[in-house]
Length: 586
Image (cartoon, rainbow, N blue to C red):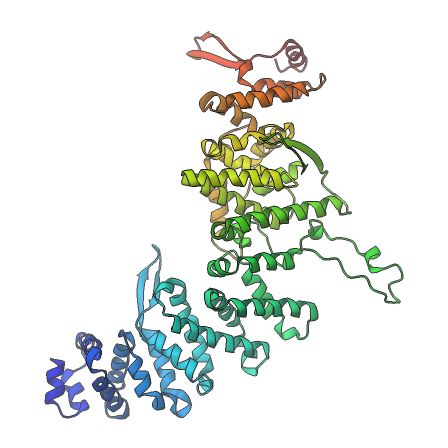
């Protein structure tokens, strides 16, 4: 129909007049243009040129033609044939084209029950970026439109990455780097209020282009830290802080983590680790700044809180994602950083300090390791004790990763789990990560198997986990003002079945294991025998606990008619019976 119209009608005006303006006709016209472009792009470009220049033709027909071109599979010829027109008069026509690409060339894709996500479609996005890259200096006057266009294109990068050709990625990278350079040079355009907040979009795009931007990202990150030390210009403060915080974000930087895991680790150490003020020879500092300097509460763990970790959760750091993408690097950082922080705390001087002791743990190979220990460390992964939120966030991320790994239930996941247990037990200087291992053991004992045995060898673990279990009802899921879905994540984590399955924590677990799983009972009983051998005569409470968790001490009572069955419970030794009777408990 449309091809016949073109042959019969002498002018474009006559063509469009004969078509009318019914929506169905206009949609059919666009589809025909898209199809006709495949082999006749020259004729379509000529039609566009005539239609745009003819002021007597309704403007919407030119727009319909442009929509069809930009939604087509190849709009390269348009940008080539119209190069002069697109750049004329301060790129006003190109600005119109950018607006049309953004407004129309999108496809609604269902992403949730409550909303649609509009994803870019058509070749117009790619060709426009290539055009901007080629003529970046000549389109300076429409810089804000280009910036907004790039922000919308970011959805394509996020959700259609595998469909994007390298030339398009390189074009976006070039535009972003030029823009970031102008920000760092404090160009006037970037000081405007409606533009300042766009810098975070540029940083996010560059980080998602990490596969082709490794060196540029490293250099930008280095400049951010150099600025923090020099403070040359207050205007760049939020910009450089944004770079560091984006690097350490727990959301949306998976490609950066994949390509530059070492940069993530380096940035975390540099930004989180506490450094006391340098000593000075100033005449006003007679006693030395270090003599006068005292740690604030938030610094007693050796962690700077300029990066906010409150409320704690897996989205407060990038290390949940790092554990999945580069598990060895993530595991080493978490163990090393928590080791550093606990060591700092032990050696720091300040008021209201938790009492930190040391416990000895016998590993499966007979090695004895010493670790810093306290109830506060043991309960840290549940957010129910008073320690630094950064440590809580790391421990929560570690637990979620281990629980998900255990849930895979393959030979490979089982071996990975055992490797991690062994690594943590041998390399951690404190019990905080061991409490996480205990949680995973509760949830997946048959995946953990013999790797759990060292966790059963320390008396304090039974005491602390009892108290942890009693506190489960009061563990909160606080609102996160910056991350809306973080509260839901915390709440769901708090509801995991193994959290409250064992009312008395580790003690109840080991009893249940001996009765129902039983695979490691011989090894468990050997551990109990060692614990009993070291018990003091006067320590009747611990002696009672060992009686209760060792099923070899349990006996079956005669059939109870009221209960309708046999009662099984621990049998206590004579001195314990006397002790319990004296205490009114027996």
